[in-house]
Image 1 (cartoon, rainbow, N blue to C red):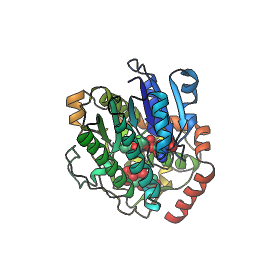
Image 2 (cartoon, rainbow, N blue to C red; image 1 turned 90 degrees about the vertical axis):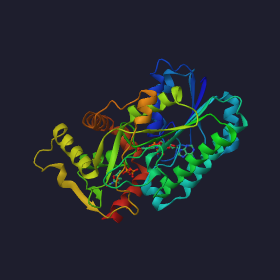
Image 3 (cartoon, helix red, strand yellow; image 1 turned 180 degrees about the vertical axis):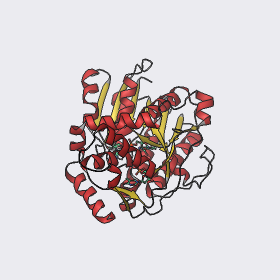
Image 4 (cartoon, rainbow, N blue to C red; image 1 turned 120 degrees about the horizontal axis):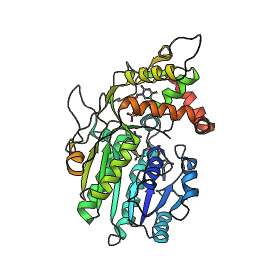
Length: 352
Ligand code: NAD
Ligand code: TYD
């Protein structure tokens, strides 16, 4: 892999992945980061890295729905591998407005595959990053395996399911060298504060309500983002072509327990004199429509075949994450300004 195209490299996982790659001694190639810079993309996540690696890092503000622009990029930079993160990624937004999810997640992926198909003799790999949400919801027991039938509940997960099917079809039909991963909920630095963990950290620190959907009993499996990046890179190097690998954090938690842990850690790190525990800020709000009850991952395939397993515990990963948000208030202030601020405030008003 000499010229690796990373899509969505200015988002949460994409920017962590690029940081991870440049710290990996066995990655010697160039990264061409293609990102549209939606509200979720932040070029500043990679400012230092870009300055220190001017000969090996290129950024292009490009929409993956623009096939001609992508085609030129492939040509200009002799792209020989792709790691595809770019997506609209937030379930609640997909419920409020699915259009961009269908465009970016389905048509954007289709565009990339079509460009790759034209260059099937030059390309080494197309790695597609997807979610465990394509499998739908589990009951109280059981785990998602790579064989679990797809049963998506939200426009987000349906659009990701569609893109996964396209990737597999392009492998079977045109012989494209693809790999695919479905992972659980990531957390860590640079996550946009609309997702559960960073939203709760910021609200808790600001003395605002902590909006827990329903009774807070829904269960998610939490994966530290660096563990995820290592899994993706492992699959890209050693994964069998045409195969899917599930990636999990071995860390099932009820939402209410996650929020309580955030409150407890913050109470220790930043005690507030004269006020009660931050748990008092928890507010139960109207449940998300079609809210999946439980996600849990069987990651024995990637563990058995490629020797990967998560390294971070939730306690240590959550503490590191909270500390990052405390130390990076410039970042959080900037991403929370403007249009995003107005949108999220409306959500709080609506959810009571
Ligand atoms: P994110 O929302 O933080 O970042 C997405 C990035 O894609 C942003 O930089 C955005 O600007 C860019 N983007 C959006 N539309 C684009 C377009 N049309 N063209 C080019 N760039 C575009 O998302 P994330 O949390 O980093 O997720 C990355 C990938 O991982 C996604 O494919 C998501 O489905 C998958 N995933 C995420 C999680 C999670 O917990 N965050 C879990 C499982 C899978
Ligand atoms: P989220 O971070 O949006 O990820 P996903 O929906 O992809 O799992 O939400 C994680 C869980 O937290 C999910 O069960 C919904 C719940 N949640 C809340 O209870 N309150 C919130 O404000 C948010 C954003 C999520």
